[in-house]
Length: 106
Image 1 (cartoon, rainbow, N blue to C red):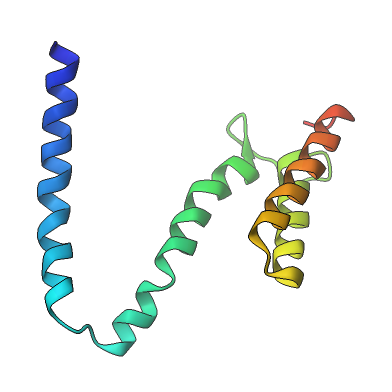
Image 2 (image 1 turned 135 degrees about the vertical axis):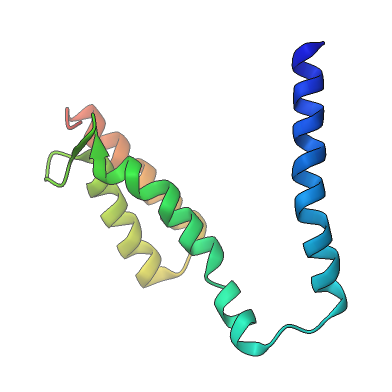
């Protein structure tokens, strides 16, 4: 029961902080520069989440050809850049990562 209450109140706080902002944005037109800047938020957040996993292993920088995460990420970035196809990018990235891990690269 204690965990349920903790999760419930965390939900209330999260909702209470975000809802007023979303409700206000829906009523007003945002300036074009702000709209343009907000388009980059998902890419920035995804990069911030993925970069440490790809570039750091065991608390150390892991920028080398033995880093399967880095190599698969580079391949996925190239596929995304050339094709602009999300599913293809994910599939190719996962295949490259799996092959590298099976081959023994960390």
